[in-house]
Length: 194
Image (cartoon, rainbow, N blue to C red):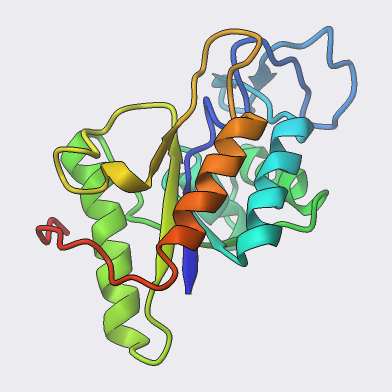
């Protein structure tokens, strides 16, 4: 099993992106307005195409680590979701991508984000000994102290700012190398933080 732990903001968008939930008026709406009044960035289809390249070349499954998880969970479980979860699912499905799972729902600290990733992998490996995780990468623009907790070699850091922000071709290539390079090696020893 190969896994791609995915953050959304700063990976599938950047501060230079303009999008609307329906995919129209890209130059007129730099932010999306949720029913609750929350304002958030849209998703860039060129960045989703780079994500699709990673998935196609590695066979990795997408596991969300993003703050978008609650909206995604609400949408897939039929609860009111402010339309953001539906927008995420639709944005990914344009490139035939789908979310395989999510880490713990709320992550407010470095330990929570790292613990969520490690906990997800530990739970998968314990319940699927016939199909253990043998390669993974983390796409994230924020430093959740991945190096400190032994995940740094799997982290592809993207940038939120600038015209080259978000997932780049180089970042996609790096993620592919990380995932495939780990495919024949055991997971790093990590402290169980979950």
